[in-house]
Every structure is written in C-alpha cells, then in structure tokens.
Amino acid sequence: MSTKVWRKKAAAAIIAALTAVGIMGTGSQAASIDGATAASYDKAVNISGNLDSFDVTVKETTTIPGQTEAAVKTVYMKATGLQSDNNMKVSMKVVTDDGEKNQYFSNGYFYSDQSGEKIKYRMDKSEILELMNYDVYLNFDSGRLDTLSMSEKTDKKVYSLSATQETLGDYSDKILEGALEEHQVEIITVQGTVETTTDNKMKERSLQTVYTIQNEGKKQACIMSSEAVFKDPGEKVTVTLPDLTAYKEQGKNEATVEITRKNQTVYATDDVNVRAQNSITAAIIGGASAGTALTELGYTSDGWIQISYNGSIGYVSGDYISTEKPIIVADMSGTMYATTSVYIRSLAGTDGTILGSYKEGDSVVVTGYTDNNWIRVRYKGAAAYVFADYLTWKEPEKVVSGYLSGTISSMTWSTITVTTAQGQSYSLDTSKAYLNVVDGLVVGDRVDISYEQKGDKLTATQINDYTYHEKEEDSQINDMVFGVVMAQGMSTITISCDDGTSMTFFKANAEVRGQVYVGAYVSAAYYYDASIGGYHLTYMSVI
Image (cartoon, rainbow, N blue to C red):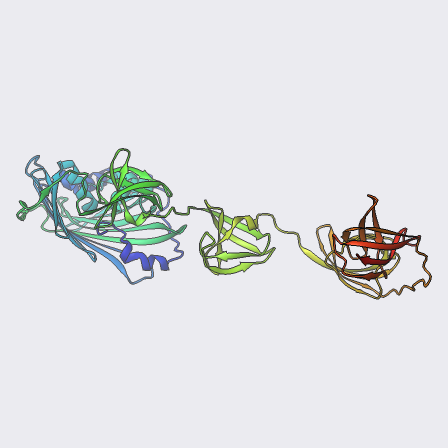
C-alpha cells in the first residue's frame, strides 16, 4: 500500500536478509530543555497555528543497514487558508514505486483520485489537518523531544533534536504513518535538524528515524530518512485545484475503491488494527489479535479486506489476513531433549517437509511453541518444528558401557543375577542380550557379560558362557505332564497343565520336537534337579 512508510513490496527482500542489528537509543531522557529554546522551536514547527499557507516537498527513504535497495516516497503538498474556518484549500500528491495518488480538500470535502477512482466525502478542518500531519508533522513540538539545542547563523537558525518512543508517546504513530501497531514497530531513536529563517519560519527539516519491526519472532532494524523543504517560507501560496465536479460523493466509511463481494470466514495472521476506511490514515475503530476469526464481506482492489465488526463495517490490511486458521507461535527459549527418534519438519504439522531428525537423547535448541502442540526449533540456522510430545525439558540419563565376570546365582527368562569374586551381586536384564554359550546357561556357570547402564538399570548386551555340562545318560524321568505353553524365555518355559496347575521348567539341553510357541499344546517329561532347585525339562513334543 503506497501510504505505508514501510512498504512490504519494496522492503521484503532486504528485511528478510537482516537477522540481527544492534542499535542503541539516546539513553536516559534529558533532565530538561532550555525554555527559551523550546519556545522558539515550538513557534517554528507549529505550522498550522502560525502560517496561513505553505508549499512543501517531503521525500522519505526507508533502508536496511548494509543494503542498497530502498523504499522511496515523495509528497508534494500545498495549503492555504489555514487560519480560516471556511476557505482552507489543500493539494496533495503522493508518489511511490506503486504509482501516485492525488488528494484535495476544499469547502469541507476531501477529494481522492487514485487509479482513476474519483471520490469525495465530508471532512472537517481538524480531520484534514490530522491527515496532513502524517506527512508534514505540522506540530512536532518540544514536548515530544528528548534533547533540543539551537545555533544561530547570519541568515537562519538551526535546531538539533532527538527523541525516543518514550518521549514521542502517541506521536510515534504519526512518525510512521499509522504503522506502529500493524507492524509491531518500535522506534529506537529519532534524530535530526530543523532550519528556520531568522524570524522562525520553517525552511528545512531533516529527520532520521531508527526503528525495528518484528519479523518471525526477531527484531529487524530499518532506517527512515525524511527530508522536508519549504518553498519561500512565509510567502503567500496559491493552491490551484482541478475540476472536482466528476468526483462521486460517498460516506466516510464506504470503500474508496472497487469492492469484490465475498462472504467467508478469514483469520488474522498477526495483531492488526480495524479501521473505518481502507486507508492507513483512517480512524482506528478496534483491533483483532492473531488467530481471531473475522467475517469477510469483500476485498478492495488496493489490498484491504472489508469485514463485519461489532455490527458495523470495518477494514483490515489484506497483508495480515488468511482464509486458513493460522498457527500462533509464542516465543520461548532453552534446551530440550528428544525422548525418541523424531522428524524435524519445515512447518508445524505433519504436512511439513521433513528436514532431518533427532535421535533419542539429542539436545534441541527451542525458540517457540505453537497452539497446535509443536515446538519451534533452530535447525541449521533456520526455524523448523518438532512435535512437542517427543521433547522433554529433563536431560536424559547417560548410558555407560561396562563389563563384569562372575557366577550365575539365579536366573529367570528375562533376568540373570551374577555374583562376582568380590561377593557383589548384579541383576541384569537379558531380554535383548546376544548369547555366546556352549550348551545353555545354568545356575553356577561362570559368565562374562558386557552391559549398558542407564541410571540404576543394567542391560546385558552379550553373555559369554563356555561351561560344558555333561549329560546324564540315565536321567530318571520322574513324571510327564500335558498342557498349554504360557510363556517361554531364554532358559525357562511355563506350562498350564491339564490339572489346572502351572509349572516352570529349566529347559537347558532338553530334546524338543516340533515348533514350540506360546499357546502350543505339548507333552513334557521332566525330573527334579536338586542342583538348580527346580524342575528340569528333558523332553517336549508339540501335539
């Protein structure tokens, strides 16, 4: 939009290139400004109060430090009859890379000619002065300043000044043409000079405004230079208006350009002002926070969305509206950890492109969280997203590898207890261990075990056992049972017998016929083995 001091089309590329710029303000507010200097300065800058007419050209250039591309706007303005209630006339021409628009004021009407659309509507003197103020700063008085000094030359006075957002107050919005709230803008400092005639009539004003814009959670710096030159200050100005009979009258809150009708729900993608007209200088009648659902009534040819607002009609910038409900991201910082292997995606959703992955235990630099349960992370210098359920703030316990030797003192299908020569006992999980054994594991065997330790838990990764067990050729079969296999492990098997009891057998060196599985119906021959304190399986057959 051509009226914005920060024009998105021209500045987007250079703003995106800037990632961090350190800029300091002017420091603490000056203790005081000399009263005489302030009075002299205020008389010069109170243009609408002291002059009846003026002719000024204002050129504004917005840049990013270190970049060559710039957004340029030039305003040509003539005004006369400022001290009259009924004879005030104004001619304004605004030129940007997007084109130009011509606006006029006469006999209580404001006229606008933009892209061939000629309209007019009622406007009182105070409203047109407010509109002019966005371009010329008609009353940028000393009460808005942090510092002010004056030096007198032979033919002029030169005032040097500075201000911050704190001292500017609500005048900050005029400095940036109403863009302060729309773009989350923060003014860092305003510095410049004002040259006047010796009798305090404005000749030139040069201001440099340094401000930041929130862009994807980061502050990005911009510099706006404004050069205003007043032609023949104090001399009478003649304002020539074109033929205004072709301008069509309409209400203030009606669109000034063609509207394409639409009826749908849209969403604010950022905090945005709701205005009375499709103009950055129109009155603010409310606001919508990021994610708010709005009813769109139509859209204008110059990029505004007409909405239903509190029973009336309002306008919001189309730059901050989407037909899809946006994902709201809140800033946060810190280090989280992956609880399992998890993908890193370009968007906060499973439709995002997979950029990479984290492994269990990897540390993750986080920068924000979304309202749909994703975490924004910094990945290869850019923003990416990970599903929140797979991250934790708790640092994982470290996994330590170890090795021990000892004698098996007890065992089950998933655990083994080993007692070392020093008399220390260790219980290890064997469910995932690789077995390197001669003829099975038996209580009393000497084993060597490699393991991993996480916290207090020991998990065996490999068990080596070279103990050979001689078979008893005439092992006495004490009994035989029939039943269903309920569970089996590395060294034992449990059967639910036909008589309703259950029995667990050590199965080392047992002869097995058929494929044994949980649920199989089997016959089992066994004997009681005092050396292991339990039943030893000698033969099993799947029936």
